[in-house]
Amino acid sequence: MLDDTQLRFQVRRRAETMLDHPPTFPAMGRVRDELHELRHELEQALQHADTDMAELIGRRADLAARIHTCNRALAGTGLLAPHESWAGDRLFWPRAVAYTDPLDESGGRGEPGGRELRELSSAELQVVLVELLQRADRPLTLTDLRRLLAAHRVRPSGPDPSKAMANALRRPVRLGLVERYHRGCYVWSASASTGFGADLGADPGDQDGL
Image 1: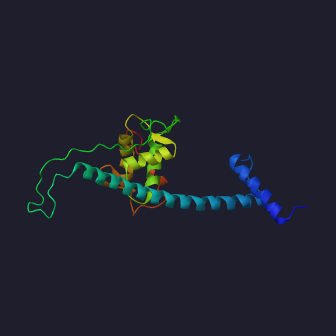
Image 2: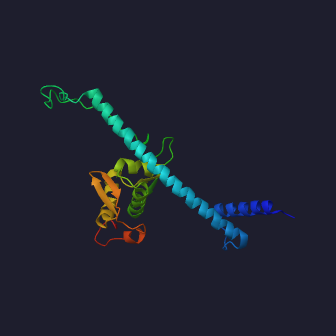
């Protein structure tokens, strides 16, 4: 006869198997209770993952800003320092230091190593972008969003990912779910409700179905 620990182990193992191979009929009894417990654990893990993602986005923004200031130091500003008698006067226009923010080695169409990213339809892209902005809870550029999409193994459809994302965010901006922070940068609206899915139905006024 199995003791409580062995029985719990078997029930947990059965529940985890059902995650990979959902059964034809609903789970019942102890296995059903275990599945509820598993879902609660997964929801908590998802919340921690969202927090980690927001922190990583913040760190990435800081690193990008440091690279920008490093480029300015390499090129010079062309302006006299504040302590100079002619402070603010421009001596020359500095030559820009090129820096390309690498999304991946295949121009956004796949991962380094050759795995293709699944293309999202316009409607799918709209929902995913709004979810990413809500979870990040900070301004994200189109480059940030494109990188996050690639991390989820997906990409916007079409030859111009940035344009596709900007088009997909037009309607959420109109609905007040998302705010345009500045050009090419968006943020989740603090006044928006969390249950936004119903608000993102097809808009007859949009030819692309958004």
